Length: 469
Image 1: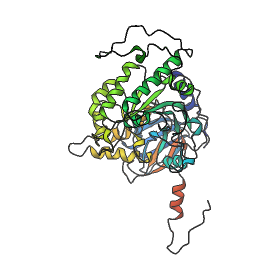
Image 2 (image 1 turned 135 degrees about the vertical axis):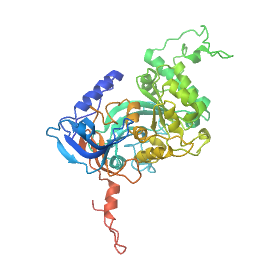
Image 3 (image 1 turned 30 degrees about the vertical axis):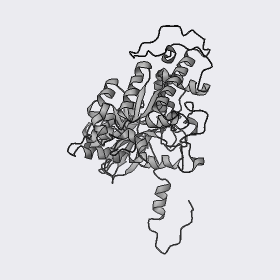
Image 4 (image 1 turned 90 degrees about the vertical axis):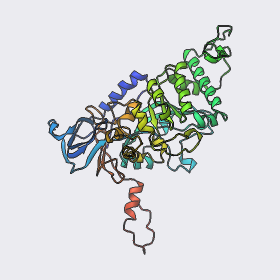
């Protein structure tokens, strides 16, 4: 189960991409070479499953996935008879708190938020991810092989810097540290910022301005504000000091040095910004921020009313990690929530994945995807095809997270992350029988599976068994 180190240096976007390529190469020495035949194969790229399929993995990477008739020579790869199983890419879960908590209700074991911290955007989950967390073990057994994990906004609208992890049984879970920044706008952001969305937007814009200034020159020079005002087409022109062109008061800052520094790559577009937002009007406001901060690499998270502004989102080219099956509003910003949200977003041309944070357990992602398939058969509803639905939990989240071609799809050269299922993976009753990450087979045992075996044949007259494992 040993794997090469995946931890990367904090480089820029190009450097990160090159570093990832190198990290995948590093697994070759420890991965298994195997060829699976006699299976139904779904590659996760949006296409439909292929019966009588085959998969070849060599050196930790996918060499082939498709009809058995097209399988290349397997050389010395170990032959595996799939016996009618299904094979898919590993599930990519975004957004989660995997590895950050043991018991949600026990504060000492829960690092998923930091409501009393003086820091916000600077929070970095990379040093605290626990690869031995039972949540990771349970989700690995459910077919989740990679995830985006992050703390939640609590003390500030900024949640901090999330990481991309793999769920392999080794001590090095972090695949890409500081992969993205998390911010909450809408109701949650307004509540945190002082009770109004207006406060959240001012706080957000001020934070990015401070980061921009810090990135340009830490020694902020005082300059006169007697300059032409910036015309945004309003009746009352905006003060130039609010447009970010001038900074007279070097000491007039709200962010700590750490938080401002953490936002510099965000405002430069070098670090992805995940924006939690639900209401249609809030989504429009978020999209408009691109006019003011054109380099922002934004992804919408939640977007329960996204279908109402699907054309605007598509035109902006902003991906969405959307709630899958909200059918009733849980609050006022979700009054137009519908189970057809993802289907309508996809139909409008939006790149959309299912939001794992909208469910209690990301291990249920495949069930949510299956429900979207069923929804396509309901008159008047908008769902997804089988291939599209699988893609929303595999290749699409991988693409959004910058892993396209490397994870989430059984394409040539991708990581050997694959799951063998005992049936259609989008059916509720199907479970994984074998899971591979980087071509290495993973253990599926966890606390829950041990409990199941322990009490499977418990007689009514038995006394409670001792806790011996």
